[in-house]
Length: 262
Image 1 (tube, helix red, strand yellow):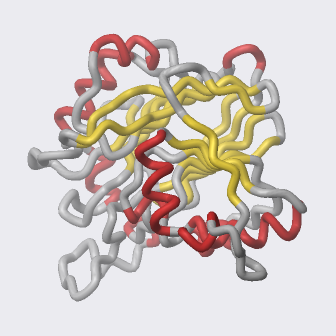
Image 2 (cartoon, rainbow, N blue to C red):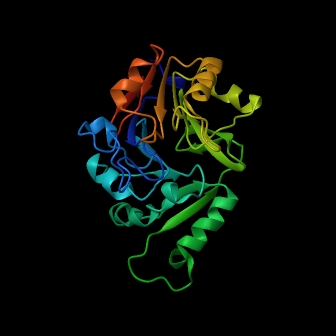
């Protein structure tokens, strides 16, 4: 697959699970008890390498584990879709990148999310900073295009029930998580994507996430070359069983999966 403007992109699924992850604590269902590694899901996050520059979308509680697993040595910026715990609680662990790279980490988030970050990580933003605290440089996301070292990132407004959240298009890769509604105008921004990664919680309808039917309808509308499902709950079922039910260009994401666009 060719990426927009010859942008060379590889994406790694850092996590593909819900806010609880899979297995879920104290659950004895067949998914949670599965020994298949594709059924073990950390909290949802994506590593994007664009022309050699590492970007991460969302940094949840598993951020440290994910960075170690993928042997990430540099990080240019973190893009935050919204402020829920499973998407921001790993931000303290940017400290290692601060030390290695000798500068603050750029964090892109809309104003409401920034206010939550400042509250949760208040020790980062006080006048007196305890030695070794993380260093963050906050940048505001609006509906305007973001540019990081020449890499164009298009924010896509989505809704997580009534909460406005952002998805992101980087070249011909689009990532949408924690969403159950995308307006027609925003869907237009996704069209032409070679790869669409989209949240799909389960088969039954949910108040704030796409279910399988809804995710497949979005995929049908925007027509990516390939689509991958993420933010999967243990209620959805086993990885291999879900895959059998999907159209030929739709795939079940799993932790550690790598996708390349050239």
